[in-house]
Image 1: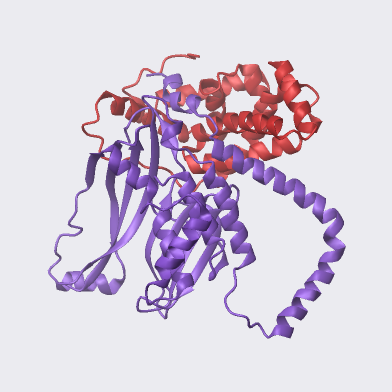
Image 2 (image 1 turned 180 degrees about the vertical axis):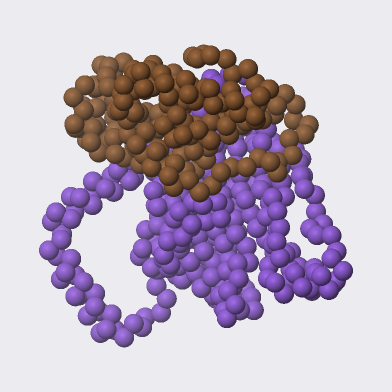
Length: 313
Length: 181
């Protein structure tokens, strides 16, 4: 093998429609911003005063509202998502490759300790939706020092008790079910109704529960772009989401955090999404317990889908 | 090709979305290849490509000669990728991945990964020169234009890079050959 052979994959790379759409959006947004600022700057001060008057005049009441900044981020992410790749874009011999690295808690109830297990799941899907999924155990850690002490007290049992590498093929039917995520529709209005009804049927607050349902759907890395876009569009209309600042995810990617606070499931929790500051694409999601001892309960980093020529890691 | 590019650039400057989109795709693809070869991280390479595409399209009105569009994209790609190398925080690691039972395709991939890992240890300008030569197939003059140096300097950069790769213990089993294009 020579140096030229080593870069064969790079030479085949082309910008995906989603990348082009995201860049076009940023380009247009920049041009719009420059045009608007030329005329609107003098009016901003007056508008700011107006906003202050409304806030103090109303006493901040009026029930839950959609955070405008959060809604903008979700809307931008939905636009990026709808240009994503689908198995229909593939030629024979090609695979749609998706990857997600995820950490979850595993509790050993007999021994009273909890560990955090990180796995990377890779999916290769053919144009007919059949394919292969491969899961690799990346590592694990005790959630807290107290969990480590409990593990020692239990006689240091072997953990985690799962396969390091698990690989299997899946059928067309299973593949179609993976990209459809609970048969969710790709139309935002229909999906909003479906998720709202589902959330309202339980004992939990509707807004945070819808947020969790949306996160559950987006967790599927091979999700159909239309369903992903619809879920993000629904998130833009869901009360409770707020921009919480900037952050870097577990893979070192920078972005803007949108989170939803809730107090069910036995304590104060924050469910968060991390969006790319440059493309608006959804990078990661995580759940954090937010009480006197804040702790990360789970996180997942999703890579953007791409087309590859063989189902190898 | 130059005529096509001239039409696209003029269309972009007239505000035609299709022309802007076509130019954007071209810029993103060129930048993505360079950035992926150097950063070895698809997400971060995408971010770099986005920054390059936006900058190139915003300043397209300043481009006097359409035929030099690609060279301009390479110049911007080099600058933005160099900046990203300085911020590199994640190095993809395949040590923990079980490569058994996937056959020759995986062997080839492991070989490619070994070479790219060794390239990632080179000084930044050598990495960029390697990417421009072996990903884009640019001549020394074209690489010199992108790096803002003389062609002789490029030859020296590439020669030093190849010598360092040949002496890398990780690549002792490879016959990296000469300047194969």
